[in-house]
Length: 182
Image 1 (tube, helix red, strand yellow):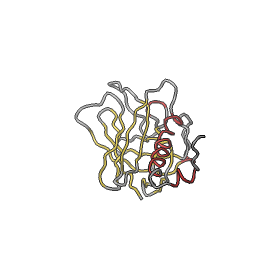
Image 2 (tube, helix red, strand yellow):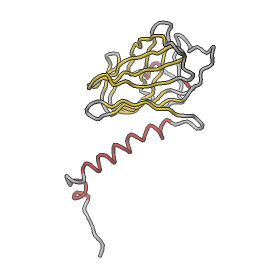
Image 3 (cartoon, rainbow, N blue to C red):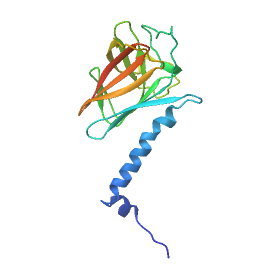
Image 4 (cartoon, rainbow, N blue to C red):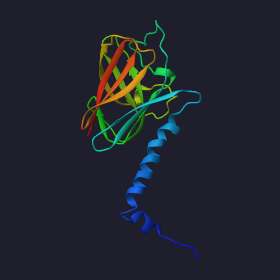
Protein backbone atom coordinates (compact mmCIF):
# COMPACT_ATOMS: atom_id res chain seq x y z
CA UNK A 1 0.00 0.00 0.00
CA UNK A 2 1.53 3.34 -1.10
CA UNK A 3 1.18 6.70 0.56
CA UNK A 4 -1.12 9.19 -1.10
CA UNK A 5 -1.24 12.89 -0.33
CA UNK A 6 -3.73 15.29 -1.79
CA UNK A 7 -2.35 18.39 -3.48
CA UNK A 8 -4.49 20.42 -1.04
CA UNK A 9 -2.53 18.96 1.87
CA UNK A 10 0.92 19.44 0.33
CA UNK A 11 0.51 22.90 -1.22
CA UNK A 12 -1.91 24.17 1.41
CA UNK A 13 0.36 23.17 4.28
CA UNK A 14 1.86 26.19 6.03
CA UNK A 15 5.07 24.17 6.46
CA UNK A 16 5.35 23.27 2.76
CA UNK A 17 4.16 26.60 1.27
CA UNK A 18 7.54 28.40 1.62
CA UNK A 19 9.25 25.45 -0.11
CA UNK A 20 6.89 25.62 -3.09
CA UNK A 21 7.15 29.42 -3.29
CA UNK A 22 10.97 29.14 -3.40
CA UNK A 23 10.76 26.38 -5.99
CA UNK A 24 8.46 28.46 -8.21
CA UNK A 25 10.58 31.60 -7.82
CA UNK A 26 13.79 29.74 -8.68
CA UNK A 27 12.13 28.26 -11.77
CA UNK A 28 10.69 31.66 -12.76
CA UNK A 29 14.07 33.37 -12.29
CA UNK A 30 15.69 30.80 -14.62
CA UNK A 31 13.33 31.65 -17.51
CA UNK A 32 15.41 34.55 -18.89
CA UNK A 33 18.45 32.30 -19.29
CA UNK A 34 16.59 29.85 -21.52
CA UNK A 35 14.41 32.47 -23.18
CA UNK A 36 17.18 34.87 -24.17
CA UNK A 37 20.41 32.85 -24.51
CA UNK A 38 22.09 32.91 -27.90
CA UNK A 39 24.19 30.02 -29.22
CA UNK A 40 27.91 30.59 -28.72
CA UNK A 41 27.53 33.85 -26.77
CA UNK A 42 29.35 34.49 -23.54
CA UNK A 43 26.65 35.69 -21.16
CA UNK A 44 27.31 38.01 -18.24
CA UNK A 45 24.78 39.08 -15.64
CA UNK A 46 24.15 41.77 -13.06
CA UNK A 47 21.59 41.75 -10.30
CA UNK A 48 20.18 43.96 -7.59
CA UNK A 49 18.07 42.87 -4.64
CA UNK A 50 15.63 45.33 -3.10
CA UNK A 51 15.19 45.31 0.68
CA UNK A 52 12.00 43.23 0.36
CA UNK A 53 14.01 40.43 -1.34
CA UNK A 54 12.71 41.01 -4.89
CA UNK A 55 15.40 41.09 -7.56
CA UNK A 56 16.23 42.64 -10.91
CA UNK A 57 18.56 40.69 -13.19
CA UNK A 58 20.15 41.91 -16.42
CA UNK A 59 21.89 39.52 -18.81
CA UNK A 60 24.07 40.66 -21.68
CA UNK A 61 26.67 39.40 -24.12
CA UNK A 62 30.27 40.11 -23.30
CA UNK A 63 32.04 42.53 -25.61
CA UNK A 64 35.78 43.19 -25.80
CA UNK A 65 36.74 46.80 -26.48
CA UNK A 66 39.59 47.78 -28.77
CA UNK A 67 41.72 50.88 -28.19
CA UNK A 68 39.93 52.89 -30.89
CA UNK A 69 36.40 51.46 -30.44
CA UNK A 70 33.57 53.92 -29.81
CA UNK A 71 29.90 53.21 -29.20
CA UNK A 72 27.50 54.33 -31.97
CA UNK A 73 26.65 57.83 -30.69
CA UNK A 74 23.00 58.80 -31.12
CA UNK A 75 21.91 55.34 -32.34
CA UNK A 76 20.14 52.47 -30.59
CA UNK A 77 22.79 49.94 -29.60
CA UNK A 78 22.85 46.30 -28.47
CA UNK A 79 26.31 45.66 -26.96
CA UNK A 80 27.64 42.26 -28.00
CA UNK A 81 25.24 42.02 -30.95
CA UNK A 82 22.07 41.17 -28.99
CA UNK A 83 19.78 43.17 -26.73
CA UNK A 84 20.38 43.04 -23.01
CA UNK A 85 17.63 41.21 -21.16
CA UNK A 86 15.91 42.33 -17.99
CA UNK A 87 13.92 40.22 -15.57
CA UNK A 88 12.31 41.97 -12.62
CA UNK A 89 10.40 40.39 -9.75
CA UNK A 90 9.24 43.85 -8.66
CA UNK A 91 7.22 46.50 -10.43
CA UNK A 92 9.70 49.34 -11.00
CA UNK A 93 9.88 52.74 -12.65
CA UNK A 94 12.41 54.06 -15.14
CA UNK A 95 12.21 57.66 -16.31
CA UNK A 96 8.79 58.01 -14.67
CA UNK A 97 7.29 55.04 -16.60
CA UNK A 98 6.20 51.81 -14.95
CA UNK A 99 7.91 48.53 -15.83
CA UNK A 100 5.69 45.67 -14.57
CA UNK A 101 7.07 42.43 -13.16
CA UNK A 102 8.34 40.24 -16.01
CA UNK A 103 10.94 39.84 -18.75
CA UNK A 104 12.01 42.49 -21.27
CA UNK A 105 14.85 43.55 -23.55
CA UNK A 106 16.96 46.67 -23.04
CA UNK A 107 18.88 48.88 -25.44
CA UNK A 108 21.33 51.76 -25.03
CA UNK A 109 21.55 55.03 -26.92
CA UNK A 110 25.08 56.37 -26.29
CA UNK A 111 25.65 60.10 -26.41
CA UNK A 112 28.71 62.27 -26.09
CA UNK A 113 27.30 63.79 -22.88
CA UNK A 114 24.34 61.66 -21.69
CA UNK A 115 23.14 58.22 -22.66
CA UNK A 116 19.63 56.71 -22.68
CA UNK A 117 18.39 53.30 -21.54
CA UNK A 118 15.33 51.82 -23.25
CA UNK A 119 13.23 48.99 -21.81
CA UNK A 120 11.31 47.24 -24.58
CA UNK A 121 8.25 44.99 -24.37
CA UNK A 122 9.99 42.75 -26.91
CA UNK A 123 11.36 39.56 -25.33
CA UNK A 124 13.57 38.31 -28.17
CA UNK A 125 17.19 39.38 -27.65
CA UNK A 126 17.95 38.70 -31.32
CA UNK A 127 15.05 40.75 -32.74
CA UNK A 128 15.74 44.13 -34.30
CA UNK A 129 14.95 47.17 -32.16
CA UNK A 130 11.49 48.65 -32.75
CA UNK A 131 10.52 51.97 -31.19
CA UNK A 132 6.87 50.83 -31.18
CA UNK A 133 7.83 48.27 -28.49
CA UNK A 134 9.31 50.87 -26.09
CA UNK A 135 7.94 50.54 -22.57
CA UNK A 136 10.18 53.00 -20.71
CA UNK A 137 13.13 55.25 -21.47
CA UNK A 138 15.46 56.80 -18.92
CA UNK A 139 18.25 59.33 -19.28
CA UNK A 140 21.60 58.03 -18.09
CA UNK A 141 24.10 60.44 -16.63
CA UNK A 142 27.67 59.77 -17.73
CA UNK A 143 31.19 60.48 -16.62
CA UNK A 144 34.78 59.61 -17.45
CA UNK A 145 36.79 57.01 -15.54
CA UNK A 146 40.57 57.35 -15.07
CA UNK A 147 41.27 53.91 -16.54
CA UNK A 148 39.62 52.38 -19.61
CA UNK A 149 37.70 49.12 -19.26
CA UNK A 150 38.75 46.37 -21.68
CA UNK A 151 35.23 44.93 -21.87
CA UNK A 152 31.72 46.34 -21.85
CA UNK A 153 30.32 45.89 -18.34
CA UNK A 154 26.89 46.27 -16.79
CA UNK A 155 26.27 46.23 -13.05
CA UNK A 156 23.89 47.43 -10.35
CA UNK A 157 24.42 49.49 -7.24
CA UNK A 158 21.89 49.17 -4.41
CA UNK A 159 21.33 52.80 -3.36
CA UNK A 160 18.46 52.38 -0.93
CA UNK A 161 15.60 50.12 0.16
CA UNK A 162 13.72 50.68 -3.13
CA UNK A 163 16.43 52.00 -5.48
CA UNK A 164 18.80 50.11 -7.77
CA UNK A 165 21.21 52.11 -9.92
CA UNK A 166 21.99 50.46 -13.27
CA UNK A 167 25.50 51.20 -14.57
CA UNK A 168 27.30 50.45 -17.84
CA UNK A 169 30.92 51.08 -18.69
CA UNK A 170 32.49 51.22 -22.12
CA UNK A 171 36.16 52.18 -22.36
CA UNK A 172 36.57 55.25 -20.13
CA UNK A 173 32.84 56.11 -20.08
CA UNK A 174 30.48 55.10 -17.29
CA UNK A 175 26.73 55.82 -17.61
CA UNK A 176 24.06 55.24 -14.97
CA UNK A 177 20.35 55.57 -14.21
CA UNK A 178 17.99 54.49 -11.44
CA UNK A 179 15.21 51.91 -11.24
CA UNK A 180 12.84 52.55 -8.34
CA UNK A 181 10.59 49.88 -6.86
CA UNK A 182 6.93 50.93 -6.69
